[in-house]
Amino acid sequence: MYDDILFPTDGSDTAASVLEYVSDVAAAHDATVHVLHVADTNRDSVSAIQGEVVDALEEAGERIVSEVADVVRERGVDVATDVVQGDPARTIVEHADRFDVGLVVMPTHGRPGLERVLLGSVTERVVNTSPVPVLVVNPDEDRAYRYPPRDVLVPTDGSAGANRALAEGIDVAAATGATLHVIHVVETGSLGPDARSAVRENQLDDRAREIVDSAVETAEETLSDVVGTVGYGTPHREIRTYVDTEGIDLLTLGTQGQTDFSWYALGGVSSKLVRASPIPVMTTRTAE
Image (cartoon, rainbow, N blue to C red; front, side, top):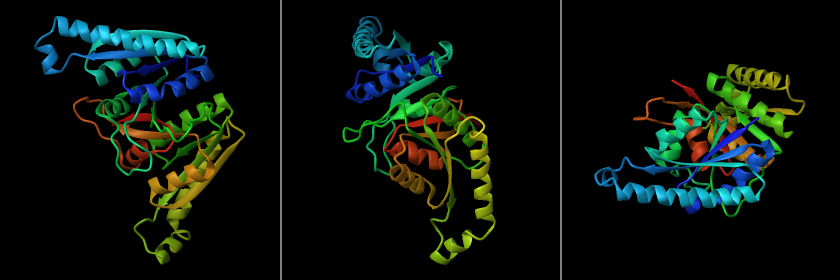
C-alpha cells in the first residue's frame, strides 16, 4: 500500500521517540523510509550570514539523517536520506510530492489527555498542506503503539473529507487485516437530558444512521469485518471514549486544509483529536 514513507526529522528527542513506530509501519508495508532533514535557512540569523553557518547546518543535518538511517536499517527496512535547505514545512510537502511518497509520518509535541496541546508549527502546516496522508504520532512513554493495527477507527459526518478518510481507512484495514470501525456522533453536548433523549427519535438520529450505514456499506465492498456506531454527545470526547473502550490502534481523520502556506487551520473536531489523541492519527486533507 505504501511503497515510500517520508520521515522528516530535526534530530530532537521527540522525533527519535517515534522512530520505532515509523519502522514498524514501513516494515508492515515493505516500504522504503525517506529520512529528510531540512536545514532551516529562512531564519534571518542564518540568511544574513550564509557561508559557514549554512555549511554547519547541513553538516549537522547529515549526522542526523545518518543516525536515523542506521536505526531504521537495523529493523531490516530500506532507507534513503536527504538534507536540503529551505522552509521546513514547505520543503517537506514539496519533497513528498517530488518523490511520490504515499505517507508522511511526523510527531506532535503534546501529551495525550490535554484538550489543547501544540502540534508544532511545522507539523500543523504539513497536515494542512500535504498532498498525501500524514500520520501524526504523539510520543507517549506510557503507551505502546501497535502497527499493524488490529482496529482502525474512522469518524464520519458524510462529508467529502470524511469520505476520503474512509477510503484511506479501508485501504489500511485491507492491507493489515484490521477491523474497521466507523462512528458518527450526534452533537448533543449542549442539550439537556430530555432533549438528548428526544434526539434519538427525530431526524438527526435518522440522518446519523444513514451516514453510518452508507459508510459501512462502502467499507463492506472491500472488508468483511466492519463495525458501525452512532454516538451522542460532544464529538471529540465521544470519539476519544470509543478509542479507549474499543482498544483502537489507529484513528483516520479527514481535515479541511489550505494550500496557502501563509495561513492554515485544522477544522474543529479534527483539530481537537489530532492535538490530544492517545493514539496515532492519520489525516487526509481536502483542500478548500
